Length: 116
Length: 107
Image (cartoon, helix red, strand yellow):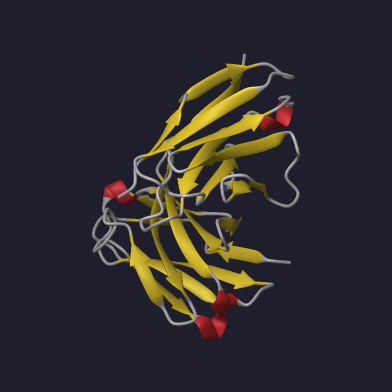
């Protein structure tokens, strides 16, 4: 069974760093792209970026380029989304999703709350 | 970036109704379009890929068509479980953009 399991909710202060994770199982992790999607409270879905764990090829939305870093460790079938300096506006639910043709399997989401 | 525009933003309908949601792309995306359903507090769920292919396990009352810049998602006979938000997404070129969403609510 394909599963993507994300790390738990985080509460951080502005300026702090954070790395959230997405662990894949039940399929060949290195053969599918993994994407990240943001959903701010009460709002729609925004595409953040995507990584191919096989060779760490990464693409970002211009809206998120330079604001986040996407990485992967194929040895433990895990993708990451990280921030070096969080802002209050980063408060959102973040989803990872496996990209077959479209995003066919999704993680349960990680809620990131940034508040002083 | 390719802009995706959905209409309507909100749709009020009753159980048994036939409803259609439209998604327009700012440039041609061939058939590289997906539709997702999202219920409150849950991750999105893939319904349709490649504009008209039904994902495994999705009820056949969902159908979709289109190519190029204009696409539609139709639910033939609304069931109580279908009241949710729906999003289109293009995956023709990076960044893979979403429409703003359509909230399907009970009339």
